[in-house]
Amino acid sequence: SRTHFIYIALSLSLAWLFASVLSRIVRNRFVARALAWLTWIYAALVILGIDDDAATFMEGLAIPLGAVRLSALMVLKAALLLIATVWLAVVVGKYIDERVRISEELTPSIRVLVGKVAKVGLVLVAGAIALSSVGLDLTALTIFSGAVGVGLAFGLQKVVSNFVSGMIILLDKSIKPGDTISLEGTFGWVRELRARFVSVVTRDGREYLIPNEDFITQRVINWSFSDNLVRLDVNFGVSYDADPHKVSELAIKAAMSVGRVEADRRPVCWLTDFGESSLNFVLRFWIHDPQQGLTNVRGRVLLALWDTFRENGIDIPYPHREIIMKPDGRAEKPGGR
Image 1 (cartoon, rainbow, N blue to C red):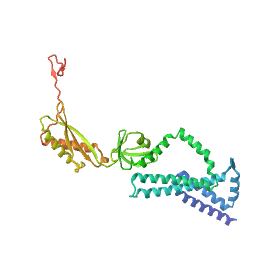
Image 2: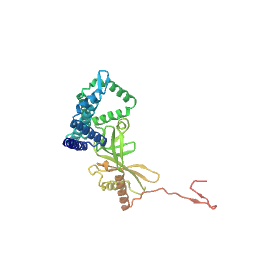
Image 3: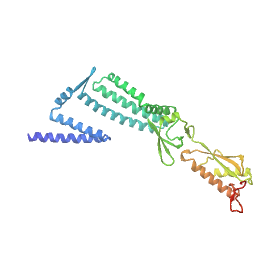
C-alpha cells in the first residue's frame, strides 16, 4: 500500500541520516563511506524484513579452512567488529596518551613510552576481542603468524629494528623530547619520539625524521643529557705589542657582557700559542640554552671582543704580502726566482 511505501521510504531516509552522522565520527574518508553504506544496507534489510534471508545466504557462502568454516557472514561480522573495536582502542589510547603527556610526575621519555605501549596494547587486545567474538579460533592464526615471521626475517628487518631501537631509547632515557642533539652534522632539538623515527627540528626550521636505529648504532652528541650547561670555545689572536695579561682580562669582561653567557661560571681565557704573527688565545665560556643556537652566541662574543679590543687599542694582526717589481715588469714574491 501507499502508506507502507511511505513508511519504508522514511525509514530508509532516517537510516541513511543515522549512517551519515555515524560516519562523520571516523576521520578516514574510505572507512567512513564504507561504514555508512554498510549501516544503511543493514537497516534496509531489517526494515524490509529480509535480514534473516540475507544472513542465511551469506552463511551459505563459506570456505572450509581445516577445522574452521569461513563464511561471508563471519568475515563481515569480523570486519565490522574489528573496525569498531580498533577505532575505540585508538580513541582510548589517544586519551591515555594525552593524559600521560601532561603528567608532571613522569619524565618525558617515560610519558612517550607509556603512551606508545598503551596504544599498541589496546589495538592488539581489540583485535583479539573482535576475532574471538565471531567464533574464530585464534590458534588457527599460527600459520599466518609464521608467515609474518618469515616476512620480518626477509623484508622488515629495518622496521623491527627501528621499533626495538625506539623502545631502547625510551627505556634508557638517552634521548627525550626537548634534548639538543647533534648527529651526522644535524644539530637541533628533539621534538617528538615516534615508533619508527625521531623528529629533530634544526635552527633553520627544517624537521629531520631520523630512524631510531641511527641513535643506537651511531655516535650521538646529546648537549643536554645530564644538564643544559654547555661550554663553548672561541679562538683569537692579538698583536705581539699587546699585554697578554690585559688581553685575558678584557676577553673575560667582553664575554660576560653577552647576555646568554653564564655569569655563575666565570669565563676563562688562556694563552695557547706564540704564533708566527700573533699571540693566540682561547676564550671558554658556558651557556645554559644550547637549543637557542651555538653560532649566534659565538658571533656575539666575537663582536664583543672586537669592540673591547678597539676601545683599548689592541690590534688583531692579519698576514701581509710583499710584492717586488723587477725592471722587466714581472712581479715576484719575496724569495722567488
